[in-house]
Structure formats: C-alpha cells, structure tokens
Image (tube, rainbow over all chains, first blue to last red; front, side):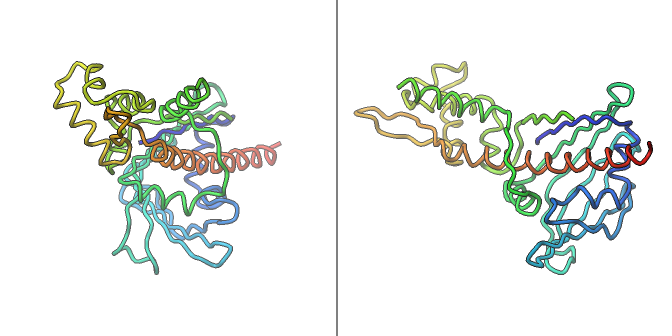
Length: 157
Length: 116
C-alpha cells in the first residue's frame, strides 16, 4: 500500500469537484499525451466511473472504477480496474483499491491523501504503463535509504 | 502545493511481500555489505535460528538475496538490482500521481482566475 499526500489552496468542496465533475476528471486523470474521456460517472456506492484514453498511436485503453464509498466532499473509495480489449469486463485485471481522503487543514487549505493497495506487481506495472509520462521524481522511503547507505559504503571503499 | 510520498509495506506478490516484513528489510539492509553468513545474521535477532532461516528463504525466493561464497565462507548478499526494480516501480507511481496532482492544481488555479 502506498500513500500520497498533496495540499491545495482551496476548500475541500473545490478539491472534491476535481473528482465529482467528469469534465474536470478528464483533464487530470490521464497524462497530457493520453487524455481521458469519461463516458460514465456515478459517484455512489455500487456505481461506476468509466473512461477511455486514446494514445498518440491510436491505442485505446478503457478503464473503470467501481465505487465502494462516496462521502462528499471528504472520502472516495474505489477499485480501479482496466477492461481488456473491447471493454467487456470478463477478462479484467483488477488493479488497486484506492482511498481518497479530503480534509481541510486550514481556512482555504485542503489536504488530499490517496492510498492505493495493489494486489500484485503486475497490476502496478500496468497502471504505470498507461498512466505515466516519463517524469521521474525523488522517492522517499526505506528502499531509498537502503540504496543510499549502499552508495555511501561503496564510496568509503 | 506539497506532495509527499510515504511508502508502507504493500502485501501480496513475492517481491513486495518479501519486503513487507521489517525483519526481512533489516536482513536486506545488512546483507548489502555481504559480510555475514546466516549464523552471524541470526545473531542480530531475538528469534529462533529456524525463524531467521525462514526469512532468508523468503528473500531468496523473491530474488532479493543470494548466498555467495566469499573465500571459504558462505555469506548472504543482497541483490541490489532487485531492490532497484522495486524502487523504480514506486518512483514511477509517484511520478504518475505527481503529474495528476499538478494538473489538479492547474484546474483549481484556472477556476480561481475566472472567479476574479
């Protein structure tokens, strides 16, 4: 499971709208060269959000969320899955259970946390293959600390 | 906008599963220097020798450590490439969300401008 936190200069209601308004969701869910089109959007337990992404080579990816919990403007929990080929759910690969928490930390300042639980490395690799431009950023974590120690040890030799 | 990523031990799948246990992460950390055999490694933990062997077996199956011969000794050695695979995946996941969060912030800024 991984947690990502971000803070915005906005109210929780405004941050919630990024998720709740399909026209806004389209504009941030996919990377710039892989824009999303949201074709269904029901943010309620048992509901679905369905989207398509069209890549530069015309490759098409369809995905959907199964909404588990939706509590505006503070909590959204969904299973993030991708439908294969023509979009039929029969050969889905379930990807992750994602929990979004939105809370005010100050007047006009909101923290959004995203926790994702992956069922497998394969699932994670798929998410990354369809979701990422080639940006690489600094990761903070125990693995990094291990590798940093390693680099330091080698330097001493 | 502040973005931070905390990594917590994910479950399932051998690589992440192997790293999900803090004793095993500690073994991986120690084994980077490839100086200690199993008996020496086990001396660091207050659990049975069999329990430590079990942990090392899990790490071996995940490809995170190997047993290597150094002179006449057998030592446990961390496979740094496997660790890099894990970190690479996690880096990429962070980059994915960083991009999304940047676009979210842009959208918020756009609508704020319209309101003025």
